[in-house]
Length: 188
Length: 194
Image 1 (spheres, rainbow over the protein chains, first blue to last red):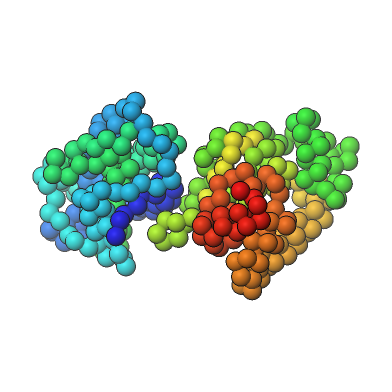
Image 2 (cartoon, helix red, strand yellow; image 1 turned 90 degrees about the vertical axis):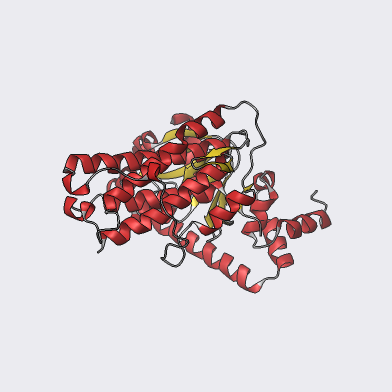
């Protein structure tokens, strides 16, 4: 079955993540830097991973949005095969993260959370907040302007290629997975 | 806001609350423009304004778990607009409010809205009447959705539908009537509506 990307739905989901993040910001530094177990990330490492993942797409999406060759404005976009495969499997279902994957080295946060100050922790959460705002701005741009649907390489290379709606959906699904991880780590 | 005096008087009729002493109430309103396709309110965000529509059509809709739109209602020239429950409770909206055509509206914020009732007791009467009308309207719509078949819902809607609504894409009207765009289109052709 085809996967359709719906920008209004994306905006609603980004708003839900923004609301959750506002709640997460009430957590103490101790809660944010605590790892649920030695092999798992702390909530603040999860947040940094989302920021790194988002930033890997910034130049690619900004460039694609500047492309002058436009397609008509649409209320939904059909995802092609490989993005559709990922998008269907990535979001959490029934409160569980499915299809766990090994994180590539470039997307791993490289700091010791136990050495983080409150200011540094706040800065990471602000980065995530800004990333969500930027993601929503990208959706709003492609939703209201007829943009190019040319494909570009995903952050993991040419094996997976996205257009802007697909890339935004992938980033959003990725964030939804990790917000759940963030929430679970916070509640340990 | 003096240029919109008639519009505001009509919107707040039949109570005729806008006597000379209430003219300062006109200064509460701010005019805003929303291009076609823009969101006045997004699901997940708090509705900050109470609107009167100067010109244009807007739809209120909710998204299903799959992200499909289900239209709850419309606002248009001269009517009130906004996500009223979110506005009153100052909590996140479950709905989107989208401009289906280029729109111009007047709006006031929650503090101004609340002050109407504090400063002018007559607005409590307006509030009583408008909430009665809203409740009766919602119950009527619910009964229509539960008891009428598609053709009956279509006929009732076409009889009371303002002409302005006929300018919006059929998929929104069809969704409001809980039918497919194809069914709506077929029924419209049967009555010679194009």
